[in-house]
Length: 363
Ligand code: UD1
Image (cartoon, rainbow, N blue to C red):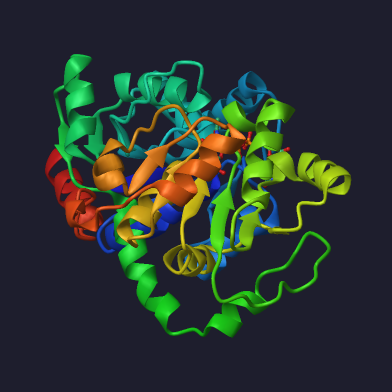
């Protein structure tokens, strides 16, 4: 069986690493990198660190408006699908690379396998929500990470070939956590570079923050409110800066001097697991990091009005906040976490195996 897998953005490299390792034992996988993420520390570092096979094709689309970026991906993907004639196309999550792959495949009548199907924020202004709803509607096999995701699909009338297999990101966390434990604290801090390429000093305790969603980074006042909150916390905040907001951060920092925030360059996956696991708390708007902190039992504060990962909210292990300075500070200092409420909602690390078995029986 031949499957063409399409990846393009950072979280997809992590998901594909977990799944490819398992499916390649039986399936001929052809890998397309759309080039949506192209900086070394947004892309290549993951291929090396996670041992992902070299992509067979790189479309090098780079950054453009949503329609242009998605359109250019579709054109490139269509040519490859016509040439490769796969039995199915596999796509992950909710990015523009996901939707481009789905649209190119459905028009050629190639079955679509969607990993991480059924998630909903019910906010159609988010590009991710647009991408997921459209992708799910035209997918052939839908692998849901949670029961709630399966129920979301049911509510939309999608019931055929829907499977709750757990979350492939949980596979990745449990697998790479072992690699992380072999390395020292000094090793991880030595790999933490600030935006001027200087190594960041070691600290005993820290918060970890990431902010990159369009809904938070589109308006300067929101970013400012968030940074002001982080600057007032009682321990240093390690803040890997997504390229989308690098320039804004540099300008704001020059004006305001956020001395409590250690702005650093994007870091690799194993580094991220280390700084997440040992952080006092996480402040983020990333979907992946909400789950990683849940699985690693670090309390999380999510700067968004809603989350697709509602299971993490039980016991206040994750709480939502507006991008409001006082609300963020209040939630960081005063949220009581009840870890007795923790449940393995995202599986036990065997999602990729379940995916392989179902593909074998369906395609
Ligand atoms: C994308 C996904 C988002 C996911 C995120 C993970 C969509 C609509 N969004 O958002 O769901 O959470 O990836 O990181 O697909 N840039 C660089 N170098 C890079 C990549 C991006 O400089 O390697 C800059 C460019 O200025 C670009 C901007 O970041 O315009 C946004 O990149 P894009 O890929 O469009 O979306 P993300 O914000 O990364």
